[in-house]
Length: 289
Image (tube, rainbow, N blue to C red; front, side, top):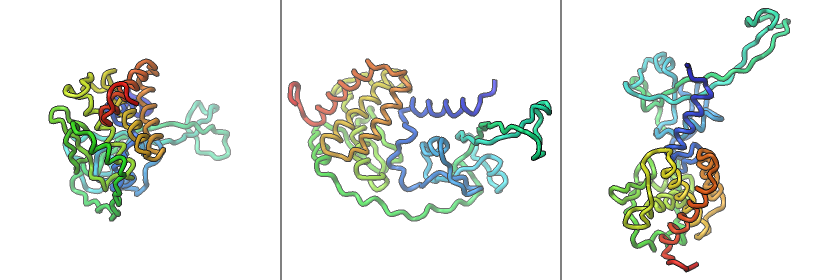
C-alpha cells in the first residue's frame, strides 16, 4: 500500500526524534542559511523547514530528481532524498460525476490535497555548480564566566573537541565532539549544547554508570535523552543562562514525552537521574544542596 504524504512526514519526524534529533533544535546551524529550492529560489517554510533543517548538509540548496536532470546534473548514486510536502486544491463538481471542471461559472467545490515528493541536497548532486554561501559574520563568542567555572570545575570530565558538524558524546573514547563555537546561534546555545553532552558523559561506567542504550527509540535511549536535556536545563539555570534556552529545552523534552506516550514515571525517573548528573558535574556530594 502506497504511503500517504501524511505518513511520510510523520515517519520522518518520528525517525528524527528516535535518533535523538529534535527537528526544531539545531543551534549551531547558523552559517548554512534557510533551506531553499535551488530551481525556483524559493525558501521552504512550515513543516518543510523542519524536515530539511535537520539535514546535516553544509549547503541549503535542495531540488527534486527531475529538477536536477533539467539542469544537466545527476544525483549521486546511493543518495537518500528527504520528503517535503505541497498543499494544493482541485475542483470537483458532484453533478459531473466527480470529474474536474474548468468552467468558472459551474458550482465546483475546491478540494484540498497534500502531496509529498523527494528532494536532494546540493551535496548529493553532481554536474551542477552551486553558489558559495554568502559571507556571514561568525559569532562573537564572549565566554560566560559562571558556565566556564562549571566546565573547569569538572575534573573528571571527558576531553572536549571542537570543529565537527554535530554535537555528540563518544563513550568508546570518552570524548565530546562539538561544532565550532562561531557556528552557534548564541553563546547561551553553545553552553546548553555542551552541558547536554556533558550529561551523557556523566553516565559512563566510570562515573554514574547509567544504562545507555544505543538502540534508537527504545526506552533506555529515550530516557537518556531526557536526562541529558534536563541536566542541561539544570546547569543553565545554575549559571543564569537566558530563559529562552530553557524554553528550547522544554520544547525538546515535550517531543520526547509525546513519543514516549506521556510516560510520567519515566519523566520522574529521568529528572532524578538528571539531578544526580548535574550534582556530579557541579561537584555537589550526597546530601548537599
